[in-house]
Image (tube, rainbow, N blue to C red; front, side, top):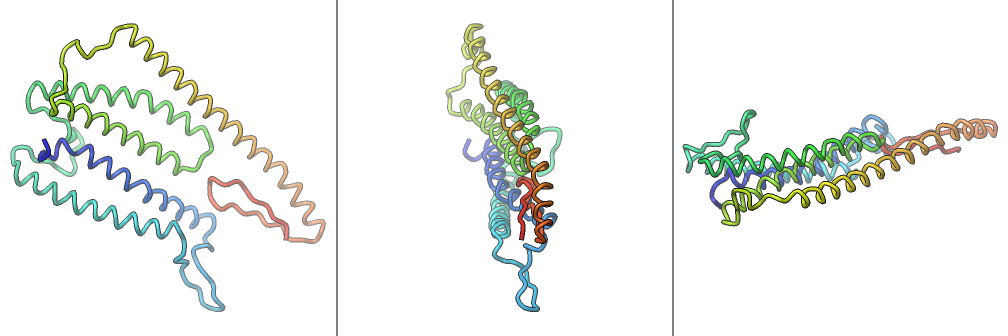
Length: 250
């Protein structure tokens, strides 16, 4: 089991998603700076202009990129070793019709893979509507990227746990693992309550955020008018897509 890369693929995918989180976050932050606050990327000293190397998103991008490159090197070596030692169970980098972790060596493994795929389907059936509702909130887009990566992590955890239980000898086939109707009813009630609470939180956050945007849209023009009547300069700034518009009078 420990030598079969096909079984370990979900763990490699989880590690990849974890490393991808800081990389995508830093890229989103840098893109926001380029679009909304391009001057922050440079430092002006007298007549010289240089790149602002002190930016935290830039440091995070460099570190996460190096970690991701190291991860790919380690995975490629493991991938080559697996294909060299298992010519009949070769893995390929780009396979769209059948993932490498989907094991079908015999009928028992086919059933285990089928059960694992069923659990993953149930996860997506519940997670995707919640993600769709989450997108109603005017959050920064990096939040949605992190949420999607978390769903992928849980998907691979479910799949690996099913395969691991089979190879560790704790797997049961047949009706022994099935829940009764009353247990399923109670589980469904808990799931519905959980989804309801999540939806309520999403709606509450959405209403609060929209109320903030509406308040700023009404108050800023009045503040600008009062500022200009005093002969001062009105400055409107927005550091990122997540932040609200900031008004200052100088």
